[in-house]
Image 1: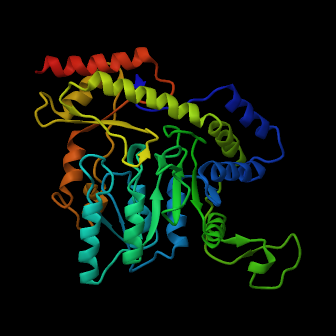
Image 2: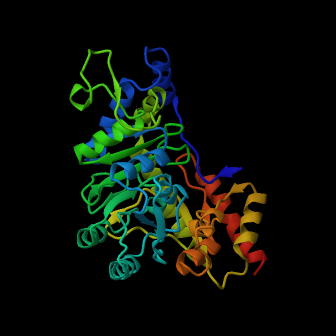
Image 3: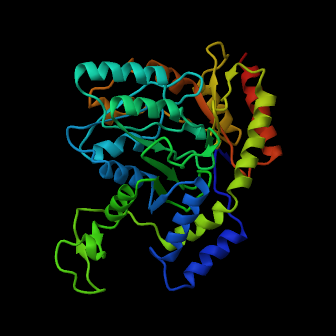
Length: 387
């Protein structure tokens, strides 16, 4: 089976992990600090806080921004459930903004209209979480302007987008948002096995997230409530979590980061071949984000309404031929949990239409031209056989 995505591990990655295994630190130690520094330097941001997953990073970012019961977070339906669940972990409510039919990112006109209506009804969001879907940057400048006008905070869910650029700067620079979240799951652009990171230019937010990722415990004398009793002393000053990244993961992350440029370059080559060889089929191809350069974590096609087969048939036939296509995503608001909160069909029609027609084709640095030719040939054959 040709997977839709997978990690790319070489001898340098193995050596980096082995070095940690032979060192004095396995859990959170010096490698974590190095990884944080290297990612923040790469992105041009001030502070990076590594965690055990992007979901943890989203949760802690929401807490650091003060999201809680009675508050409201908005995100998009076209995302993994964690983009919405992070609000529920904090006791806050969730609502969604429909997507743009071309980019599949948050629709700026829909966001502006929904904010105007929310102000008139007296319930604006405290936090908005735009998602850089498939690694294509959202229109961060427009979102920032709306945040100033309506007073909400911005968390970029950039789980798909390390290495992507917006207006000539790396996603993660923090110019247009309060916090940026990366994921390092094995199918992402670089991996730490499991892992995530929150980036911010606000030192207080960074400090708050570091505290919350480690049980709410501090060893800093100036943060303590009681009397500092020595280097051995620590205090739990808040209710935190065990969201720490290990040195094993961080060492792998540092090694992977050094190859990020090559990973992105190979992904772009794959995208160019797909674009050239699929252009005549009855499918909508993904586009490069305006004012940006995508990371191309995913390559998602959408079947045209006039396509001779439906998505279910195409999915089944591609997999029967050894091609691990996937679906990103079934709309979050139609998941059973969110239906119980009152969402239903028709709430976000663009995301729902997209969710019925989308199919992710394999893309990862290890994908060969021969494998890509098989994917393209099979896609053509399935469509023509049913035409």
